Length: 152
Image (tube, rainbow, N blue to C red; front, side, top):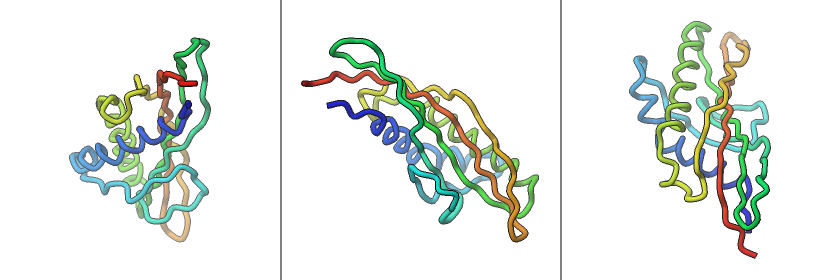
């Protein structure tokens, strides 16, 4: 039975949980690890920094018993700060840590069906202000390629 995009979501989340704390700590200005992960961003951030690994779309290949698929996934995260300039630098560090974690980690140790994870695009998003503070919700867009044998 095909697992569809859920395996890609699980793999990306596992990599981020395992790899980003070390990368964030090693930044010129050490950053806090993500405090939690979800799959549906509803505009509310429980306790920043927070990360969502969200499904977008799946493209299927035309191969008989072997199913090739490309899952489009968005990693969105929320960070807050009191100074817009410092928040912009923090945002760039988080984008860098997420991208490096996904580009440098051998994916086979997390899921044998995942072949590659491609970082497709960074979307830095607008700056939000509320009650004297600021927030950013940048996104890293991915394509996760998978090959799965379908058992009937």
